[in-house]
Length: 193
Image 1 (cartoon, rainbow, N blue to C red):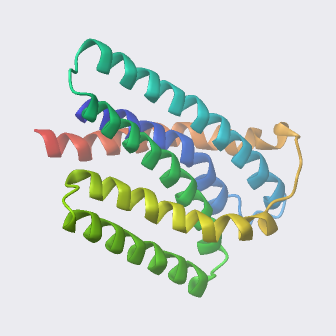
Image 2 (image 1 turned 90 degrees about the vertical axis):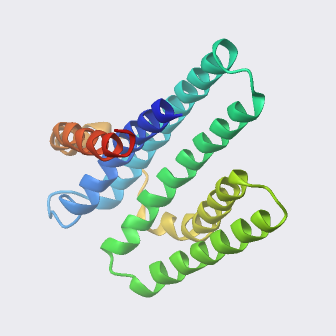
Image 3 (image 1 turned 180 degrees about the horizontal axis):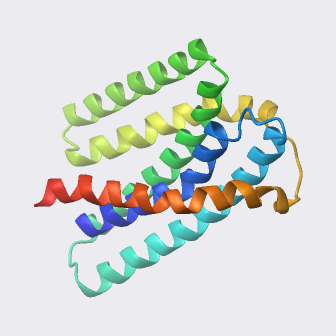
């Protein structure tokens, strides 16, 4: 389980880093059309998420077949991967609204997310679901957040399939992934040591 946590943290940093760079360093840059950059970054994010999700599901399936006798643990890890997918989208979508200083909207969305997490988790814990209650609560809360964000995100994107405009942001982005991953390893290492 700890190896899967490390993998998911690495994949999460790797997939969401380009959006982080675009919404911080390149968002106000006059030479870049941010709507086109964000559209291309979201296409890249979807491709990365599909690839990493496939890798995680395949890795989980391999571990389950060869080392784990309990199918419930495999199911739990698959749910954990779903949380990874939903949280990656949620994190990058909310970042745009934070950058545009839409504080009321982001506060409302995060409040609904927290309320959903509390209601789903506490009700499932009450009926005896155990650890699954937390995972189902996370899935429900990230889904609620995406329900609010996806319809509004289309106003912030402009369709353009010219991937050459991503060259500069990607050049700036990839060296920063190493520091994010090493930071994640240090944080996780403190938990397991």
